[in-house]
Amino acid sequence: MQNFRAKRDIPMAHHVEPSVEEMLRTLAVARLILGAEMNLQAPPNLSYQDFPRLLDAGINDWGGISPVTKDFINPEAAWPQIAKLQKETEARGFVLRERLALYPEFLAREHFVSARVRQKIDELAAADGFATC
Image (cartoon, rainbow, N blue to C red):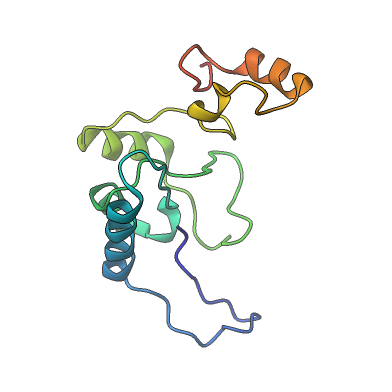
């Protein structure tokens, strides 16, 4: 889930952005409705200093983060440093792991991707389906 950020040149420029509390409630309800097996992600850079609370609300994925590129949709919102993201993630009992564009449970499905894509995935994925380090 991605919280809305108002931009000057968009049709919703004057709409109110959700509060952190609204985002946390929405994530918690989504977790309850979707269950523990569903992957639920929210970007840490759009919750600024409160981003660790997203884990408390039930996410299990930070989404696409990058130490070398900006968020092209929200360039004003810098990514947290990977070390800080890892520290806050581990402080809540989770492990920060790099994954591929597909979640590991989809990589295990036979015929889910073409043979050509499968070959590339096999080069990049560890046995558990996460990215090799």
